[in-house]
Each structure stands twice: as C-alpha cells, then as structure tokens.
Image (tube, rainbow, N blue to C red; front, side, top):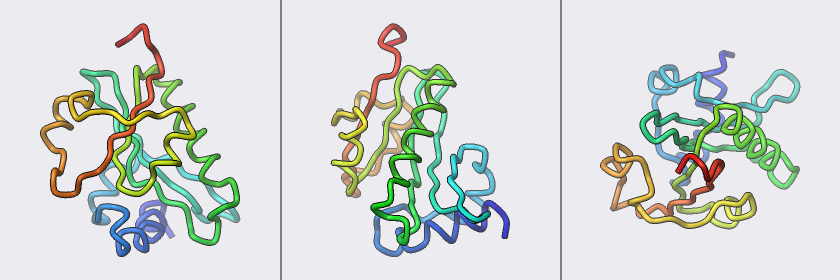
Length: 145
C-alpha cells in the first residue's frame, strides 16, 4: 500500500469522529512531502503534516493522527519530537497547530494558546470561524520574530 493510501486510511477514523478535517486522496498526494510518519513493521502508525509558510518562516502542524492501537504507547511523543526536530532543521521561527481536541497534548510540548493575529496572514484568512479551533503556537527562534 502506498504512503498516501496508508496516511489516508490512518486518518479516516479521526475524520469520522470530527477530530480531523477530511482530505481527499488527491489532496494528500499533493502535500505528501509535508508529512512526517512513524512506521512499525513497514506500516505507518502515526503521521502529521508540517506546512511551510515562507513569508513568516512558520510551520503549521496538521492532520496529526496515531493509529488507535498505538495510543498511550509514546508514539505521539515520538511524532511530536520528530515534527519539532524537522522544524528546527528547517530553521523555522515558530510552529503552530489548530485543534479542538488536543490542548493538553500541545501544551506538554511548549506550545501556548495564541490569537488569530499570530498566524501567517494567508492562514488567518482561511481560518474557519465555525469550527472554532484553538490556536497553539510554539516559538522556536526568538531572534527571528
């Protein structure tokens, strides 16, 4: 099974629960290089995208999913550490995530709640006010802000 197919399949239970936004196979295929994945036995067990916003030198963590059988196993911590490391390697100024359900998770990794104005301008414009996601932000390089 392809990487895109595995990510699509991994995300579906969370899409059905309303925890993740629905993304088509085609959409995922176009942004597949954004994704950080963890594998076990050749199968993807966790994934998240990291979208780059060049003008602000920022990254957005999105579509974070861990296979349910790997919940409470440290897998989500490994995934977050990999995302943070990728962000540092990219020399991003800050990373952010929008979530209705992951508050405590993001706070454990040094994120703080932030206002809409702190997002890249293009992301501010696409923010879904009806979804009312909380914005979590972590500064990586204070010298760049």
